[in-house]
Image (cartoon, rainbow, N blue to C red; front, side, top):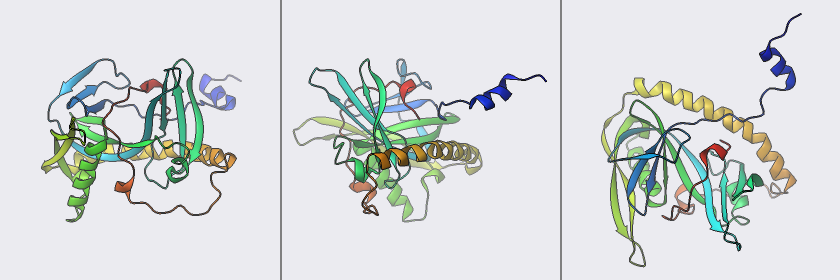
Length: 258
């Protein structure tokens, strides 16, 4: 009897690598007011773009923080992507020259007392330039999208039904410092037949990623005794902490486990 590599891989246990969804990324810098487009998995060489027009396809959440240890080394924490404040999350810590490790699990309500520096960021998977991009927004830019979503919802309109132009606005902070944020202006209707297949693909991939994290998150939460206490208290989405406009450095995309 002869064997193929793929047959033996199944017997071996398959791949332990989690499902990933790597797409080009658009990042907004609240300090400079610039939008930069990066190829998938590469944040070293970006191209500035001005007032792009895109269609939001799927909004995901992630919590992040950035701080300095007493020895001045960088400490970054982040969670896996998720859909709701009710979801169970894994918190990862990345330190310079020490790699990434999981340090906690539970709902965000469970985690915030232990990790108060975590702040919410949205990954808005969007249709732009005839392909899917991940738009990363936080702070007032995120709030701008939340407000637009609520405005459209009053008329029964979903975000994916519209095409938006991203324009930059500026505002003064309490100390007089100037910061920038994105505005989402409707410029037309989307083509549902065009965006539909991309939305279905994203949905399938995200469901698979979430399923892979679910058991790990629950196990870690149980081991850390974070699930004792019953039902989580309901929280309004826009009452969650708003991320500051300090970019706080980058986590290497190839190291992020989602």
